[in-house]
Image 1 (spheres, rainbow, N blue to C red):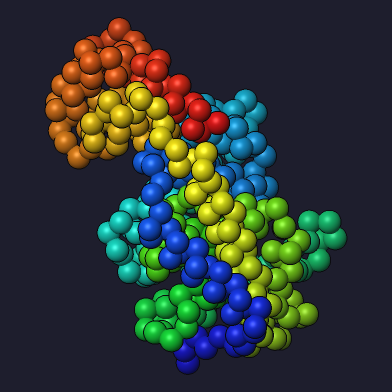
Image 2 (cartoon, rainbow, N blue to C red):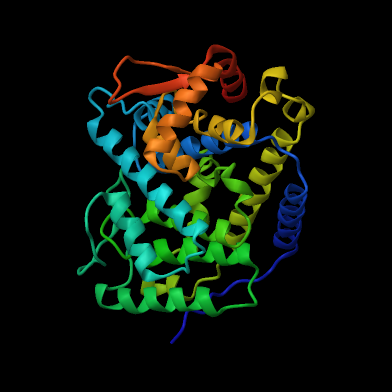
Length: 357
């Protein structure tokens, strides 16, 4: 038996797929500045982490998520939420590295992603679990038996890697659906499913350089998200979910992608964002422009971060940072020589602030 999803390509789905393709193609020839691109990517990353964890009950605000990740701040009385956000950040970084390496979709990739999400070594569930309604306590969904999980996961992975006919965006949609339907782990299934969706969208060429957040779309329409995933009236996997018509979910998914793509296109190619930054930016060389991207995520950085970002030794990174201090590009933010941190000088820091606010 193989994974054989049941759905139809409606006219609405075709229309949304056309919109998605048009935006994707338009980005190939777009001339978005590196700093703006880094700004959009950083904002989208924070939004994705915030909204994906919020769906599961995380109480941190988007600003608190940003402080937790980039300023290493633990929010008072929110230690568990802070840990969850940091774990998701690590999992997202792992996914991005897998995309860069052109990694294949595999059970190993899934397992590693889930381990990072949960912050522990884990394995597929060995018992039955269920999803309950928080208000009534009633069972909302009863997944397949534990003995079938490994088989179903193997079939899903094989289908992704061998199916050459299904539009790639629909493949991502179906993986999202099937993963939460199998519910292979006791916890962390929703967060892992959304990360795997992100991986596949990027791998298939629909990443738009990581400057959008589908998680925000789901969180802002949470009832619609859960309703679209509920493809059959019966809560038991074996009483209809196994062979349910997935057209409704696919239409919801591609509508969301089309909507998010359209909004990010407007933001990225607006005249205000395409104009030249300033005379200061034109003074910078290629390496300095590149390191400006790092400062859209961090207010202060170390020589090790600079070296890692530019692919050089730490000693070279330290020497480069010191030369940049002499040139007025960077300034030292503390007096320690062993643990020195650097920040942009005032005129360049203002450019980052203006572009990321």
